[in-house]
Length: 194
Image: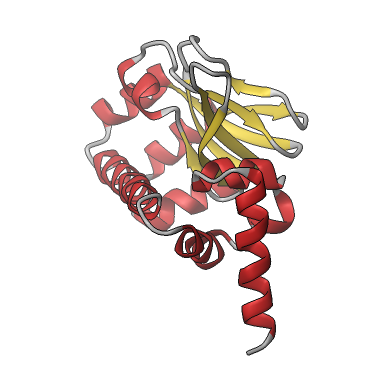
């Protein structure tokens, strides 16, 4: 629980009453590798603070191919954004890629915090801005050549190369697994020579 409060304090120091409210209302959820965190079509009821582990959000196209939209890991704040903030059915599936612990604040308690403590608006704004910018960076990355996409991965998410299956990283970069393998090899060959 202290990790969550510390993360929020780094954005803006929590007022004592707000700190108590969040502490008392956080719920802990544990997921095993491969467990669904949010199921497609369900209405997500929680804003999550990932204490430990790794999750991914993905969609499936008409042909049954998975497209990984994002990854979140320990220290990240997670929400199935559109579905959570609008309280509508999720258009993506979220699954745990490792054993994962998520501390969660319900949508109702999130709304109460916003209404009772004006200072919580700063937390909300910072969180939304951070993840909106990350989403924009990912979309811009996917417009680049394959090698530059892999460079983006190594610059921003290098630890994922050892933690995530290549097929998920390939779909995150918008590459076939074979092309991903080729680009990955090229990257490491090039950087081994320097």
